[in-house]
Length: 209
Ligand code: CO
Image (cartoon, rainbow, N blue to C red):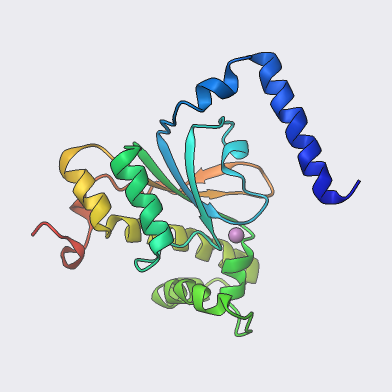
């Protein structure tokens, strides 16, 4: 069997298993989605949102890109955030990075990797902002781990700077969280950088004053 055929075969087994547990499973799911969470994670194949949080289809709205970056000119991400916040009315947005992130590690070198260099520039800016703290860490892996955390923290702040999220905060509760997943442990670390109002935001980024 070709490796791609494994997926079709796997899908048939999946569909059959679900129907055996609950004959109405797909009928119910097809009626609509009401996820409480928006997940912004890395494209890395080892960090699948549903699997690592033990959640099911319909529970998490997902956006993934290389190194979980929130760029204010990225219409893909902005569309996902707007739909999740204004239509689905998610209660939580989670930016989840992961230790051992290839994108974060690549951004710390002076090598070129093609088109992605432009994307990783966003992480180089995070590095530059925290250069003193990062360069006090001599071990490359540990420095990459810290940059992974700082990158998540900055992307949480970038979400808070969007008008979509600021508008939501005027009328309802919406929490933005920063997490890092450990590939070695399978465990998520909550960085405790919760944003749930504009209080922590530099005034220049606020649209209400
Ligand atoms: Co990654």
